[in-house]
Length: 358
Image 1 (spheres, rainbow, N blue to C red):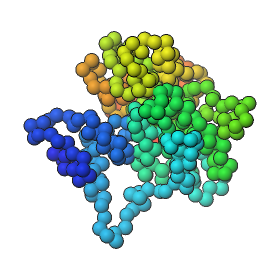
Image 2 (cartoon, helix red, strand yellow):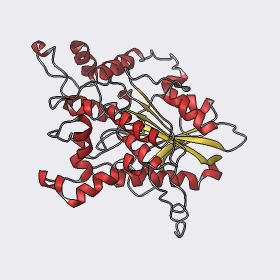
Image 3 (cartoon, rainbow, N blue to C red):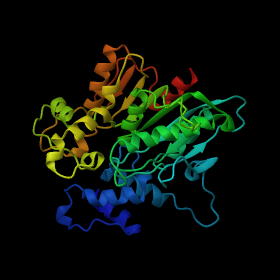
Image 4 (cartoon, helix red, strand yellow):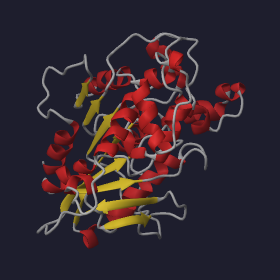
């Protein structure tokens, strides 16, 4: 596997400079991060972390997908081009979205919005399989993919507030684009999952008194889907849920909260931000249904476990499911060894389609 990855990445000038004796070791995280930054679509499960297996599969498909001159490419390889690309909803270059509209729709259509992952530090709105767009369009549902400012620009809550503003901007143009503003759902992987849950549970950020017509639009959604997502960004929850008082934050959270030294974790500012950033703290009995997919099994976590593994752990879904069940809210959680007793949907896409078509 290691040798294959070296050869395929070398094709694009990104290789793992390791000796054959290192063949059993995991690929360096910084190399994989560089690949992810250059090719965000390589993160096939959209959890914001590129695994060695994903990188191998991506470059193999990329190599095998090269056509001879004059040979046509299939529709799925090219992907369906958005009706409107890089539509701004703010002044920063990251405050933009792409949107695909249902062709020849005779009535306003629902909308699903993809929000990318990447630990709030990286990622791009293009990080989804082209076939996903076609699936929603064929179901009569418009599709949008959204960027947002990352933690190199500033800390929480700019990522969540940007995504909310993006939703408001789309709703303000619902008539123009033949959209049903009452039927909007969000989904994403990792950070995008966290944003989707936060939007789903947070109180409406609309300001009915604003002179800005966009700000008067609702930020509420009807359903949320997650892939390897987090229901909390509170370091205290991490430690309690995994039973590890000495658990240390992964690399994303210090940037997410603007932490400059270890003492900041105990500051009132960061404590308040951790509570507010965690979607589970905003949950109320009138909130939306959720479908949560995890690609890793429900394994035990120790202090030696890498943060990229525990930060995408199914426990984040199970804890949210527990609280939502107490409120009699629908929350389905799936993982390789976590199988719902009754899943009437079978997939995240089918869940969102059903909720948007109801």
